[in-house]
Figure 1 (cartoon, rainbow, N blue to C red):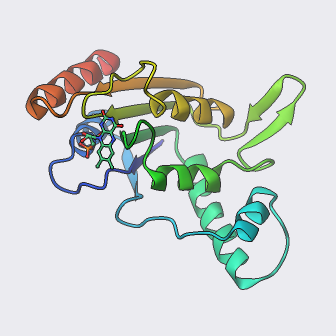
Figure 2 (figure 1 turned 180 degrees about the vertical axis):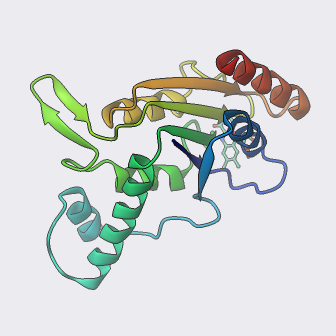
Length: 191
Ligand SMILES: Cc1cc2nc3c(=O)[nH]c(=O)nc-3n(C[C@H](O)[C@H](O)[C@H](O)COP(=O)(O)O)c2cc1C
């Protein structure tokens, strides 16, 4: 029963999403594995290697082996968890680029999902995920939010059974209020 915590805010101090994921993992009270995508960003990938990772190519070139190894590592972290916790900062109406890169490493046919008669079937075995979305002012779940719904779709594709959203919008206002409101949402979900 492990929690995989995935943070992506470029702020290491004063980040609302990080403060809220701190609180959430503490409340969950399970063993936590942390994957900080801002502290250790996925490397850039050539077009050729991206296509080969996506297709699970068996080519032996060194650059591709390194990308496939990282993909395996990320996928193992996901499959070893029963709960995923995402700290997502909205950047230009969507997820941080490092989180999109993580998605490109994790969504692989035959590894985390497969195509069935009714579309993609997830293979992750993960029970639940919490998505904490921090924004400056863009409403979470509204028409301009291409972050939280996008990530929920990705998690559904890999078969995460339940996805819960924590709204941390409006950080241009008073961060303390946003964090307190998010903590309240977490308490309501977990109590
Ligand atoms: C590059 C960049 C782009 C941003 N784009 C948006 C945006 O599209 N909409 C929005 O409401 N806030 C935007 N913001 C503000 C952040 O979403 C907000 O500061 C949020 O609290 C960041 O998460 P954090 O507090 O965990 O660092 C942006 C901030 C940065 C640095």
